Amino acid sequence: MNIGAIKNTSSNKILFHVIIWVFFILTSLIQFYESPFTINNDFYVQWLTGIILFYLNYFYLVPVLLLEKKYWLYFVFVLALITLFMIIRINYFMPEFRHTRPLRMMPPPDSINLYLKGHRVRSVMAKQPLFFKIGPSLFYILIITISAIIRTLTEFYNNQQNKLIAETHRTNTELIYLRKQTNPHFLFNSLNSIYSLAHKKSDLVPDAIVTLSELMRYMLYETDNQTVALEKEINYIQNYIELQKLRLNNIEDIVINVHGDTRHQFIEPLLLISFVENAFKYGTDYKGAAHVKIKIFILDNNLDFWIENTIENYVKDPENSGIGLVNIQNRLDLLYPNAHELNISQDNKFYRVHLNLKLDSIQTTIN
Image (tube, rainbow, N blue to C red; front, side, top):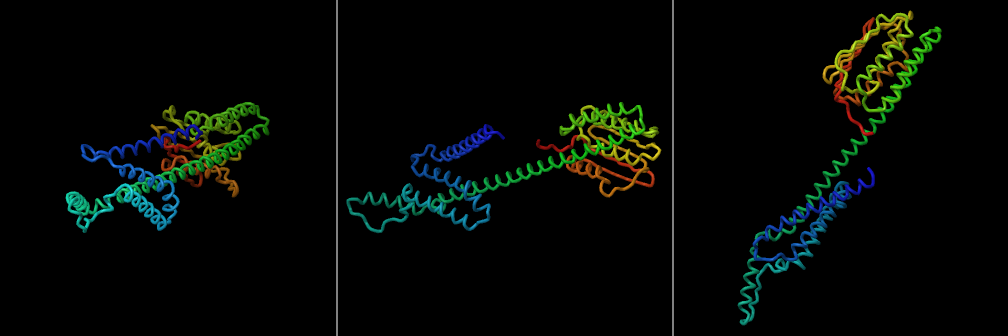
């Protein structure tokens, strides 16, 4: 966020607070409507001290004491502030609270009327209900409570947002790492295919290099985005298959069928290629014949991906075996949580993968 945006946000917050306080103060003035009494100075002192107490509690007492679980110290400070404000108001702005009992000494005869008048006023004050006497302190308690609730909820919300941002950045970093793993893995396999053609002195080497350049162009310029058009991703897979066919002797059992409308659909780039790479890696026999069958069905926003290959050339490598599949499983968990189903099965002859994916359920991330 730039400096201008920060200043604008701060200004909006200040304006919002001002509007809220003006609203509450104006609302409290309703009690004086058509009243014979004028607004005394205590009304202004009440709101001034209330606002001071609110922000002292909001900016200091709650974050420094309450949220740090220093409960006793917090309540001591709150009680001290309320007592201080009440003493100031009672001694300087609420004289009626200093005389709540009638005088016992009879005044001089010439001032009997004045005495009786004062006696009646003070008697009325003495008979006021308890709420009237403790009302000012309840006002401060209400201010403290509202301030503490707002600050606590704000802190909770900010913590949740910070956790979400941190998790998003961690996810982005992990996805970048997984994508970088995919690129060299694909490149090494493709170069091995071209090397095989060159070793045979095949005339197909130039075509293989052109196909590889198309694949690399896609990887360099298309896959930096969070999603790519499904149609381009499928074209990429088809080009990879064509590159593999150039090095094989028997390609009759290499089939890819695509059903459904791929337009206006998007997918995480290079998500399916690991399955295809493994199929050619382990589904090609020593004679250069491969059995790889791929079916892709798109219906609405749902993708079904099926791939099957024979197990002809499977020699387990403890260091590198399964890297591509682990990679893709991690990416699926990060990008399509609860929106994918991956089933892998194997028998004595075939290795099968079925992936069901909800294309519109990809998780958004922060760049």
